[in-house]
Amino acid sequence: EGWAKDLLAATKLAASGEIEFHPNHHFGAVGPMTGMTTMSMPLFVVENARFANRAYCAINEGLGKVMRFGGNDASVLKRLAWLRDVFGPTLGKAIRAAGGIDLKSIVARGLSMGDELH
Image 1 (cartoon, rainbow, N blue to C red):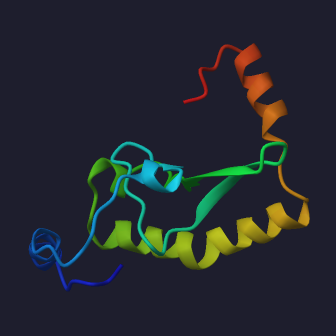
Image 2 (image 1 turned 135 degrees about the horizontal axis):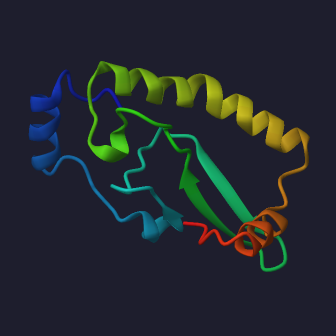
Image 3 (image 1 turned 90 degrees about the vertical axis):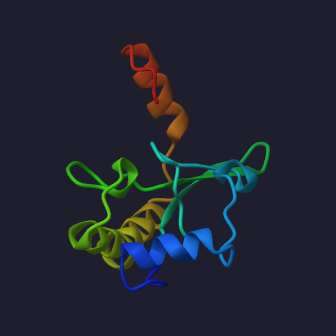
Protein backbone atom coordinates (compact mmCIF):
# COMPACT_ATOMS: atom_id res chain seq x y z
CA GLU A 1 0.00 0.00 0.00
CA GLY A 2 3.04 2.29 0.15
CA TRP A 3 2.62 3.02 3.86
CA ALA A 4 6.27 2.26 4.68
CA LYS A 5 9.53 3.17 2.97
CA ASP A 6 11.09 -0.31 3.22
CA LEU A 7 10.60 -3.81 4.63
CA LEU A 8 11.98 -2.93 8.07
CA ALA A 9 9.63 0.05 8.39
CA ALA A 10 6.74 -2.11 7.18
CA THR A 11 7.55 -4.77 9.78
CA LYS A 12 7.59 -2.16 12.55
CA LEU A 13 4.34 -0.62 11.31
CA ALA A 14 2.63 -4.01 11.15
CA ALA A 15 3.74 -4.81 14.71
CA SER A 16 2.81 -1.37 16.08
CA GLY A 17 -0.92 -1.99 16.28
CA GLU A 18 -1.64 1.00 14.04
CA ILE A 19 -2.93 -1.31 11.29
CA GLU A 20 -5.84 -3.68 11.77
CA PHE A 21 -5.57 -7.15 10.30
CA HIS A 22 -8.63 -9.32 9.65
CA PRO A 23 -9.14 -12.74 8.11
CA ASN A 24 -10.31 -12.68 4.49
CA HIS A 25 -13.27 -14.84 5.47
CA HIS A 26 -14.70 -12.02 7.59
CA PHE A 27 -15.34 -10.21 4.30
CA GLY A 28 -16.52 -13.16 2.22
CA ALA A 29 -13.13 -13.39 0.56
CA VAL A 30 -10.40 -15.95 0.02
CA GLY A 31 -6.75 -15.45 -0.85
CA PRO A 32 -4.14 -17.72 -2.39
CA MET A 33 -1.33 -19.17 -0.27
CA THR A 34 -0.71 -16.44 2.34
CA GLY A 35 -4.26 -15.24 1.83
CA MET A 36 -3.23 -11.60 1.84
CA THR A 37 -5.63 -9.08 0.34
CA THR A 38 -4.88 -5.39 0.62
CA MET A 39 -7.11 -2.35 0.25
CA SER A 40 -5.98 -1.52 -3.28
CA MET A 41 -5.95 -4.99 -4.83
CA PRO A 42 -8.36 -5.67 -7.69
CA LEU A 43 -10.60 -8.60 -6.84
CA PHE A 44 -12.74 -11.08 -8.69
CA VAL A 45 -16.33 -10.77 -7.55
CA VAL A 46 -18.24 -14.03 -7.79
CA GLU A 47 -21.96 -13.45 -7.53
CA ASN A 48 -24.61 -16.09 -7.07
CA ALA A 49 -27.54 -14.31 -8.72
CA ARG A 50 -30.08 -16.88 -7.53
CA PHE A 51 -29.30 -16.36 -3.85
CA ALA A 52 -27.89 -12.80 -4.11
CA ASN A 53 -24.64 -13.57 -2.31
CA ARG A 54 -21.09 -12.65 -3.30
CA ALA A 55 -17.57 -13.84 -2.65
CA TYR A 56 -14.25 -12.20 -3.48
CA CYS A 57 -10.79 -13.39 -4.49
CA ALA A 58 -7.57 -11.60 -5.43
CA ILE A 59 -6.31 -11.98 -8.98
CA ASN A 60 -3.47 -14.50 -9.25
CA GLU A 61 -0.13 -12.68 -9.57
CA GLY A 62 1.27 -15.25 -11.98
CA LEU A 63 4.50 -17.23 -11.75
CA GLY A 64 7.91 -16.32 -10.35
CA LYS A 65 8.62 -14.06 -7.41
CA VAL A 66 5.20 -13.12 -6.03
CA MET A 67 3.75 -11.82 -2.78
CA ARG A 68 1.76 -14.97 -2.06
CA PHE A 69 5.07 -16.86 -1.78
CA GLY A 70 6.70 -14.18 0.38
CA GLY A 71 8.23 -12.04 -2.37
CA ASN A 72 8.43 -8.39 -1.41
CA ASP A 73 11.04 -6.65 -3.54
CA ALA A 74 10.62 -3.93 -6.18
CA SER A 75 9.70 -6.42 -8.92
CA VAL A 76 6.83 -7.79 -6.82
CA LEU A 77 5.58 -4.30 -6.01
CA LYS A 78 5.78 -3.35 -9.69
CA ARG A 79 3.70 -6.38 -10.70
CA LEU A 80 1.10 -5.63 -8.01
CA ALA A 81 0.89 -2.02 -9.22
CA TRP A 82 0.39 -3.26 -12.80
CA LEU A 83 -2.39 -5.59 -11.65
CA ARG A 84 -4.00 -2.71 -9.75
CA ASP A 85 -3.57 0.04 -12.36
CA VAL A 86 -3.63 -1.73 -15.74
CA PHE A 87 -4.69 -5.37 -15.81
CA GLY A 88 -7.40 -5.30 -13.12
CA PRO A 89 -9.36 -2.38 -14.58
CA THR A 90 -9.02 -3.72 -18.13
CA LEU A 91 -10.14 -7.21 -17.13
CA GLY A 92 -13.04 -5.74 -15.16
CA LYS A 93 -14.24 -3.75 -18.17
CA ALA A 94 -14.03 -6.82 -20.41
CA ILE A 95 -15.95 -9.03 -17.97
CA ARG A 96 -18.66 -6.38 -17.49
CA ALA A 97 -18.92 -5.85 -21.28
CA ALA A 98 -19.43 -9.60 -21.69
CA GLY A 99 -22.20 -9.56 -19.10
CA GLY A 100 -20.14 -11.61 -16.66
CA ILE A 101 -18.76 -15.12 -16.91
CA ASP A 102 -20.82 -18.26 -16.33
CA LEU A 103 -18.66 -19.98 -13.74
CA LYS A 104 -21.04 -22.88 -13.26
CA SER A 105 -20.28 -24.27 -16.72
CA ILE A 106 -16.53 -23.77 -16.21
CA VAL A 107 -16.66 -25.53 -12.83
CA ALA A 108 -18.72 -28.40 -14.28
CA ARG A 109 -16.24 -28.83 -17.15
CA GLY A 110 -13.24 -28.75 -14.81
CA LEU A 111 -14.76 -31.34 -12.48
CA SER A 112 -15.61 -33.61 -15.41
CA MET A 113 -11.93 -33.41 -16.45
CA GLY A 114 -10.71 -34.45 -12.99
CA ASP A 115 -9.65 -31.01 -11.74
CA GLU A 116 -10.32 -30.46 -8.03
CA LEU A 117 -10.69 -26.72 -8.77
CA HIS A 118 -8.57 -25.37 -5.97
